[in-house]
Image (tube, rainbow, N blue to C red; front, side, top):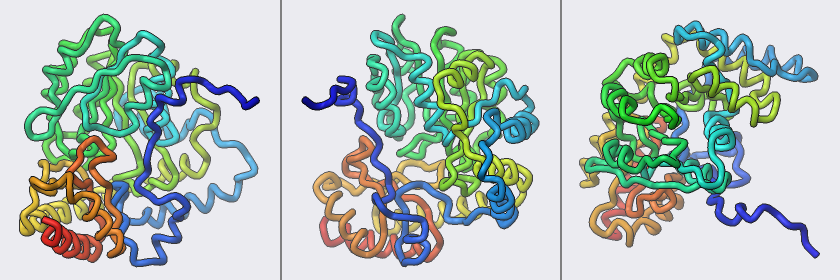
Length: 370
């Protein structure tokens, strides 16, 4: 007789990473592989951050600070909020999953746009809750009016990914604020801003000001993208103290390791250098977007560190072959069919050399299969 497991396991879609299983950071660093599938930064961590990690490593016989006191204090100082509003997490995904555990239950509802971050479908499935996926509007942006219409008395949670993953599109904070004014106050809204630093239309602090106005708003941020710390998995939320307490209640203790805490805290002290790396990524974005246009491929308007590339009228038929061609050339990208957008590719920006190789290989492949 075999062991019995929760019946909900069968309905949990799981998460398909862009990194091949078994692949290590050393595998990528020591090869010509262009890893353009995971929206990582092509820039290594700052030398000062690496030094801080090394110093922290000498005390790995001790547990990390369970409250991440220094990191939360610095984040509170930077954002001008009290530390009781900051929850630090093992990547922003941990806050998402914890929010599902703290807010959702059978019969409760969750609303989100689709395509959006591929972790969202897991929340309802894990809690036995009901989900509503709202199709994106023209231009592959969130349809906030349709999302409002999808909210019912059973709705507990709404998620807005901005800039959106995988489409890279962005809605101004003014539109998000107008949306929040019409959301019932008992419904929690998670504003997932993993790529907020790469958009150029708004001051990133605008969403933090919205948190002070709307008690039901949660802003998610991460150090994985703009701060080059994807390998250490550290993110955070800014919210009401009540939300922080709720997610802390359902998480494991010591979820953010000491190396991640030290690295993130140090990174916050080097804003100018981080901003320089972000500016370089934005410049490369403009160059790569022009490259897609030159080979006849359309993209959604990007405000992130990646592009959402349409493969054209025959996109669904050729997507698998194009992905295989790129892989054979040592270039890894994300197939759109895995992200809710068949016939498209999500392509992160790497180094200039990697991007040039990608554009050349992509143009050849699309030309051969179209």
